[in-house]
Length: 327
Image 1 (tube, rainbow, N blue to C red):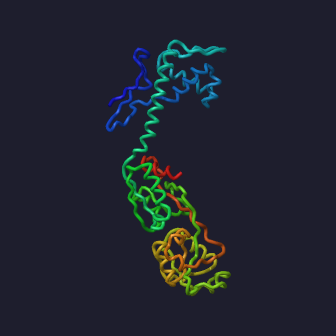
Image 2: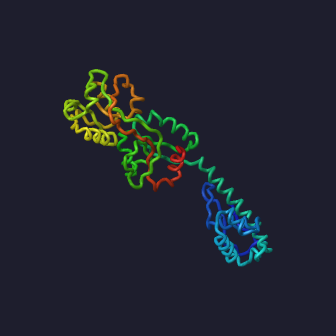
Image 3: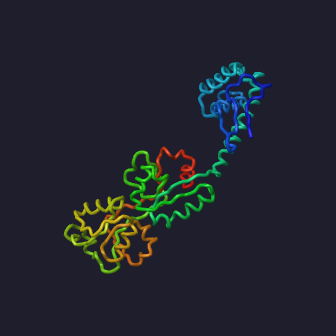
């Protein structure tokens, strides 16, 4: 199938704004020489108003910019489109003919733009997404089910692991997108879009009690020296925990350093020590009934959980479709 969108030769010779529009493979339209749609829009507005001041206000351009745009059209066409003096503006014979052409082009332009927008629903390809196990069954189902309805031909590859590696995997190009907690300082070239927030909680086993009220009221090096702690190997929770401990002059007695919040919950529930995990992990843990929460002051800053992507890749149609779907 072939489309040719060009001025009628009986109406206009020597056009230079738009040569032709054709369909290539899979009926995907491309523009070989892109017209200046802005210039045509200004021309059509002026042709309707026949008033430079009113047109410049409606189109949000200065009168001088409007005059330059019309002059460029006239120079390219080699004809005068408007006769203007101090009191009036009117279309010339060539201007009337060009208005018909410009209207046809702009209508075609709008139709093509609309078809492009409709084509987005038919995007196909593959996206890779990285997140923690907790994220995969806490809110990923809702995200993917709605996305699947809108873009049924995009296949998702889901990888799960330590959420502390969410940014790193996107930076290294291992994943198109990832879900994790926003770091205190977002690396250059990384974009973040928030999905939800979650408190960061200090947890212990229901029995035995590893922390008593005095230790909670007066945390310090002496009162916490024998308290076993199970901490993340790395990541935002570890950074914030370390800062809190340092602020109370506590050198932790580390029982274990593990990868993944679910492992912390499991070891704490067995009584091996206390730990720090996001509330969202507890909300979805089968071991939550075996966990007690400790209120500490000041509380740890909450998590801002969301999507990560490379800024330079947000123009990729598949990534953009997923990214914009969450807004």
